[in-house]
Image 1 (spheres, one colour):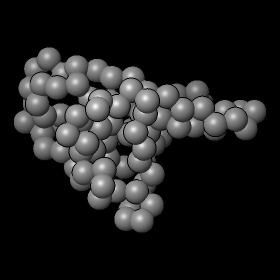
Image 2: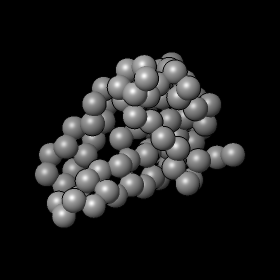
Image 3: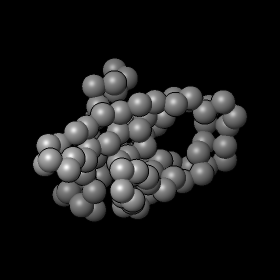
Image 4: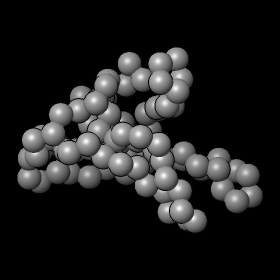
Length: 90
């Protein structure tokens, strides 16, 4: 699970925590008033991979700073897979 800003920087940090049917990920303190994108990919109980995404708009700016850019993340760097969903802005 990742949370990414429109600048393609990560706002999520650490591994995804799964408790039963609920998955969550820690966030850095959020920053500008923009749309953030939550992307997930899980394996269901029957073994099928399920992925999806949703977005949310931050209405009050925070003082946080983003993490690394997507180009700087992934299995070749820190082992955290990152992908764009079909809802990714162009």
